[in-house]
Image 1 (spheres, chains in turn blue, purple):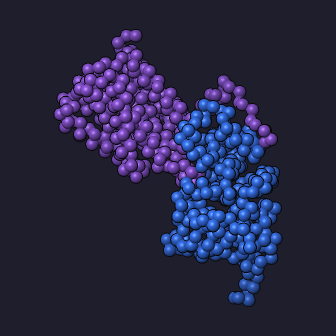
Image 2 (cartoon, chains in turn cyan, yellow; image 1 turned 120 degrees about the vertical axis):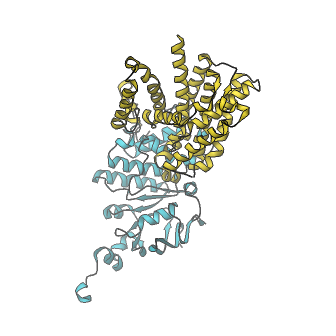
Image 3 (cartoon, rainbow over the protein chains, first blue to last red; image 1 turned 90 degrees about the vertical axis):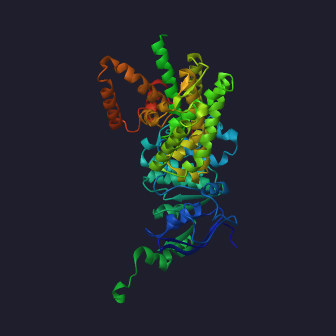
Length: 257
Length: 286
């Protein structure tokens, strides 16, 4: 039986009477690189929001390492090992790149001494050093002191990924990390995520760039209209009839008419 | 230093300290239009402790600040349940309640005011002000300061990264109260007389303007705002009749040209870039 690190069990979510997630169940294997895909409006980002606690779930459970995290406050889920990035960039616009990344370290700052440590007055402190090195590893070493609002979209997108990674999560959830990146940046990101994966971090990725998904991910979950229509190996997803119909429509429209 | 400039300097110090009392909550996304209420509590309590209880002035200033901080801590819980314009109204209402209480308390002289015996000259006021400025600059470089700015920019995302937004906001509001208490104590012991009429809505509005026009993105903002607002009317004295008209026009122009405040993070980075070379970034294999 596969070793599941994250389990989404029979979860439903309604918005003003509209069921956007409908009794969805899937497992994310420990150490896997799982893609969560589906057409626009399928409910992929909603699943991320339910796992990270942005929205409360109406029905079902989210288990992390076998423990129910469905009712945990948002800020405690990162302590359990869940970290994420966002479809639309949600960096702190008035902070520098390195400060945004240091925000990602917050869950590891547990003592009063950590809270009152003068990050800005001791520029070579361990927190700043680790954050700068993480930025450099992502090819962003030239930007540590820049205020992020002044940086290009693609750079901001990658800073978000670094911020999510640096909390040392068990499960790293990335919502369209390659959106807006050029070919070279996308490939650099894929290599970076492969490195992260090799460290044992489980990846759960929402992405529309199917080439990126094929090259990075080994498992795929497909949603359509809030329902799961496929769960399995990435190599098998293209052959699945339900998935093909969700993306391309049915071939026998004429007959149906 | 002439008496005139000593007076201006004392007012400048008071304005800087009170500006920082509003900046601390503002840096974590809370607009406080009740600064006058907190300053009044600091002024009356420190004045009472040094005059009626006979404590040394510095002890009285410290205790006045702590009492104000305690009041700020207690009222932060109901006030932080409100957001945006409702928070502005709630803090304003708090200051009005404080005014109503002190004007009826005979122990503090009620409407006639309360004379304070001990005198704080610039030898006391300037070091206290420098202490407050250094404290706020230090705080903003810490992880707590980083949390405050993160909560200001995007509270839900800050929470996703483990920041306890309520703790951060309560701490900022309480520390703002402590600093306002120091401001009140400076006032009480410099003017040697505390009248509740001095701590009205105009004071709260002006102090909020120091912070918003100075800028909330960095700890330099309130300093620049308070210096500008204190010294500019003096500089405009050359045209005695029109100086407040010029001053008002200048404020409107600043709001139009720099709505984010006089001092921004980007501006400081550019200035820093003129004087310091960038530190080389670490390599990927560092």
